[in-house]
Image (cartoon, rainbow, N blue to C red; front, side):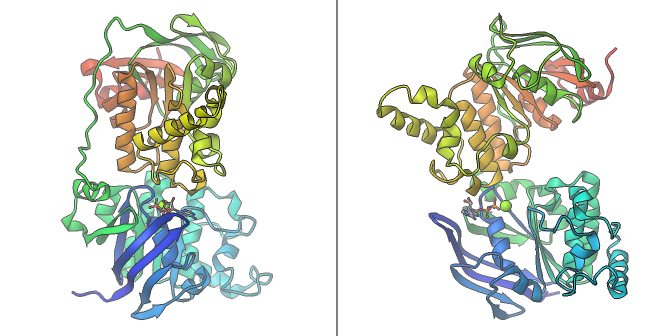
Length: 499
Ligand SMILES: Nc1ncnc2c1ncn2[C@@H]1O[C@H](COP(=O)(O)OP(=O)(O)O)[C@@H](O)[C@H]1O
Ligand SMILES: [Mg+2]
């Protein structure tokens, strides 16, 4: 059956200053289908979504909805045509209740809203139709993020949205919540709603979408039915080259390589106890454990960000026991923290300062020529990490998430540490960036840096680590190397308590 086309884009262009975010993008979306958009961080997916939904206006090109040429000047106008955007950032009024948020703007008189029986009736109809149950009268800020997403979806449906654009909706949902969302999307689709669905989870796309468009560097590389695609073909199109999904081949440090980091009977009352391990020069030690097992706390303690109750931390056999991150850095320890946006970057500052600021003392110790050194070193790091755009002077906030993450990496590599603690280094990045980060960790180890790698992705941890220790409830429950680096064995240790 030939579906009717709902949306057609013709040669859309969009620039942000020097960045050509969308280049001649043409795309057709059929009614009642799920159309997926994939691409590396920075490929232009969110920008495209925002243009369709009237958040941004294209510099050139045409948009047709139901075969009529449209020009939206605001999201409101797009919504009036039945186009709703559920963006990466939550866009609700936190102090207002669920029901107010859903119907705000549909009812002009917002004071009378709560008492309005009609609205309540519509609310329960909506709940019944979508099977999304959320208590109507609590303020939205009291809800968990996943629940807030549901409110946004309800809000779109209450407006009879015919096209719902979802930008990475599952990035913040649990697996269970994601399944519920997919069920809802399928249901709405069967009643004729169209979706544009942006996600990094290729499995998700292959099972949910009808068609998929791959974007790369602001262009649409290809559009095809998902049956014709696989993880491999999508990744190849996204990156423009073939990438093996495997891990770099492990190169083990010499057995007599000196011990770079030695953690001895480290305890922090109430959080973790009696943690002892060593990492040799050039070795990658994986730290496995559930979220909340104490992994991050151990890392923070070694980095001097949290106090210890007992134990010693030695770097190349010298007790350092840092009491602040500054002391840890001086001792050669670097930490790539878990929640990057909040902890690591100053979003308003250009990339170059984000990378070199913590090290400026060193760079600025001489006359002018040093500035050029700084610039060159930053450029070199940005290109090694394949940061896009490759512009040291762009503000950090203008970069996409994965690229911001790479900038954080660069910050720590600017001055080579002896020990790098990487806490979930690939959380939330696209496949291409993930692969680059794997290569990077691998080559840092080869250069002699000792690495403590924390990851919830067991496949990744096994793929990269020379050795793994498991933590449960703040205690070490096992150590694995060689042929013992197997998922089932490690999984077992993650869930078992220390004897
Ligand atoms: N408001 C903005 N100001 C400046 N540059 C932007 C802005 N929004 C996006 N960009 C740039 O446009 C490009 C595409 O970004 P985006 O659409 O967010 O990519 P994606 O969603 O695929 O990760 C990136 O290079 C990004 O840095
Ligand atoms: Mg995006």
